[in-house]
Length: 225
Image 1 (cartoon, rainbow, N blue to C red):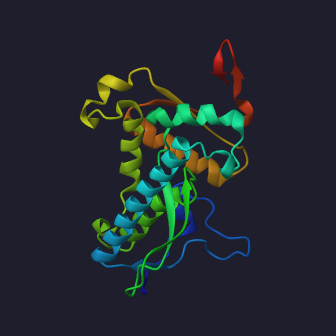
Image 2 (cartoon, rainbow, N blue to C red; image 1 turned 45 degrees about the horizontal axis):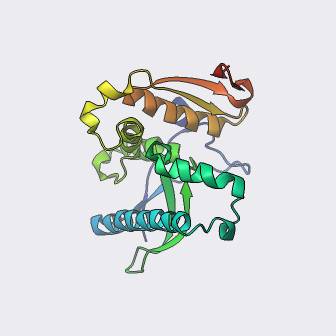
């Protein structure tokens, strides 16, 4: 594994970006002062592995639905119809997922540890902090392989257009609104949720933010806070 030492970002700079969980409980920095260098071929291999595995997860989910295997997975019977309805309505599919891999370097095969769908852990770090680490150390930002922020924005658009062209998004989204919410008192959750809110706004959605305990659901009035 090739590691490159960098000048760490100061806590003041991190907080200016909205990143307040920069120090662990033992007072050590959460963000490392090293970055991992991978070749273009290695980066492409991770990308291809993630895409192939995602297609396998989709196929596995379809197999469960086609063969009514919900009980074998411990899924309660009263959720089956909702799952089938949600699966058929592609607008319900998640925005992103995170694959945790082992291997992929020094000629070792890539192996899946786990797949986290719609789990926002490390979204802020990947979309913002990695970019800032390169920029503040005078490195070419294009050397960062991921384009998570742009991909999230495009996926918000796809929630509306589905199979349509993203360029035609403006004629689809008028009237679409999203309420973003997190638990009060957890700064990491809140800032990550607000990052997702910003990407949705960049995509053209009208958004609001409220803490979970401020949101109410009503059969007549819908969602309000």
